[in-house]
Every structure is written in C-alpha cells, then in structure tokens.
Length: 124
Image (cartoon, rainbow, N blue to C red; front, side):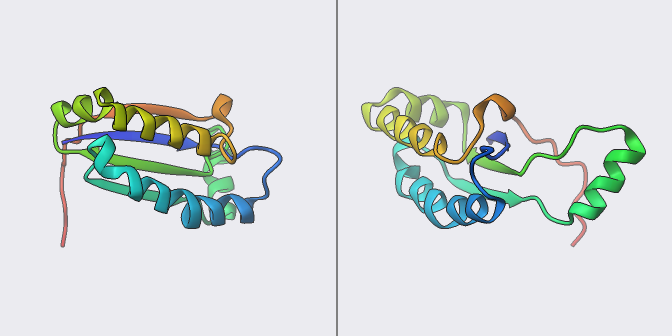
C-alpha cells in the first residue's frame, strides 16, 4: 500500500472551531464520495489536540508549532493511485477536492507527500 500524508495548516481567516467542523463534516464526506474515482481505499483525519502539551514539547525541543491536523489517504498500490490520477473522473475529483480544500486550508503552510509504511511493531 502507499499513503498520501497531508500535514494541514488552517487558513488564518477560518476559526479553529469552523476549520475542524468543516473538515470533518463537509470535506470528509466529499472525499468519501470521490474515493472510487481517485482509487483510494482508506481515509483518516487526525485533528490536533492537547495544545498545552504540544506547547511543552515544542519548547523542550525547539520545534515549530504543530500543524492543525493530518490527513492520510491510502491506495492498495502505486498502480491504483496512478490509475485514479489518470482517468477523467479521477482528475475531476482531484480538482474538486483541491477547490474545496482552498476554502479552509492554507496551502502555503501545509505539506503533502506520498509514503510507504514500514510497520515496526503493533501491540494489541
């Protein structure tokens, strides 16, 4: 499997409350509605929490402020990702997602990249 990791910073003109509400209740269902078109098989949003602990970790390590959250999108294979990116439906879906993201995400402060997971351990 391959995974897109999107480290997200909210737009400055969007409140934190509205950012998290919109991302979860509006954008999430939009992603689900186009998942087949882009060939994706799994989607997760991770919303940043515990600001007081984040501040302590930042100060102790000299780190940058945290992102407002992370989105992860999985594909079964590189071929599935490329297939979803190459079809007219996949391209239209990607454009629709980007247009929607522009309403609540600050692209200039966000990062996106493709990864391949290497699980080290999983305790259950």
